[in-house]
Length: 375
Image 1 (cartoon, rainbow, N blue to C red):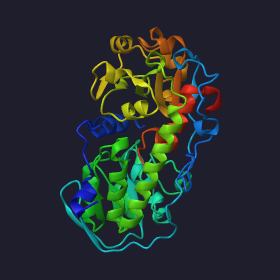
Image 2 (cartoon, rainbow, N blue to C red):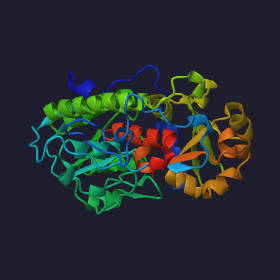
Image 3 (cartoon, rainbow, N blue to C red):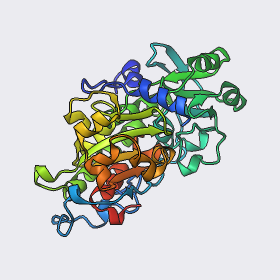
Image 4 (cartoon, helix red, strand yellow):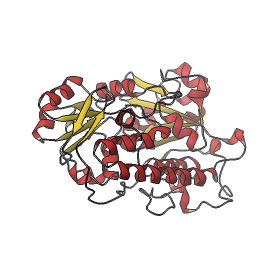
């Protein structure tokens, strides 16, 4: 990355429509490897475990598979270097247009609704400097850290200040904004990052975080490693994707929280479209012209008629599991509903769009194409 401004703002691909406001709103309201050296994560199992040039031999047409499957959780990030020494101070212009000088990265909080920022801090080798976590931070290395969010994804200013952080990395996917302003007023260094997430923005996001903590060189190395892993993952997945266009699985990402009104189809620009495309599926919401999100009512579900529903594990559980999901209007009338074809993955992993994304793709591909190997 060039200057400080570009390093923190990151890139904004024209195709990406911000997801943060909707996802933050519904989550807060609801309370809600890769076969290369030094790979950051290895899903267990992964497509790589048996992929060969004729990997589709013996595999069923994915559009006719029946029954649910759970994508296996992926392993924690392997740091690009252990115990690095940040080169501070560094001054950045953050995504809110604020000029921020970072002088101390000894006690870090990295908080966003996706878990991306903390995952990146761990990938840079500063995981032992994290002093707390948000509800989206599901890495095993963070399991015992104090929780600083409440009611799902709402920042708890008192809990944060009690941890005496010297640096808070965050974005606008969490709130209320008054808490972040309170932290700055209390003398805590707060850096805001671009809230947009997609596969194409992973490298820029990694380098942005690295720049803010004084680890530019390691940021470039980590971004390069992730890019290599993504290439390997996509090549592996391509060997199990049907060659015939008509056999590609038609997938819809359903976002649900509870049994009431939090029930959406995510379309173009929401993130899952990237995942579905990367594993060789057809995002039926995008194909139907849906940009952003749309209530998953009976009309929308029947119009898209997916073969597979992709969901977050906790979201599926909150709506009553598969039986509860099938009771929602329109769900049982779709091909996915009739075949009970629901693929779920851990909430803190499936949309993380960070260092673990290559492994997430491999795990999702297993669940879609080789369900007997998943979960």
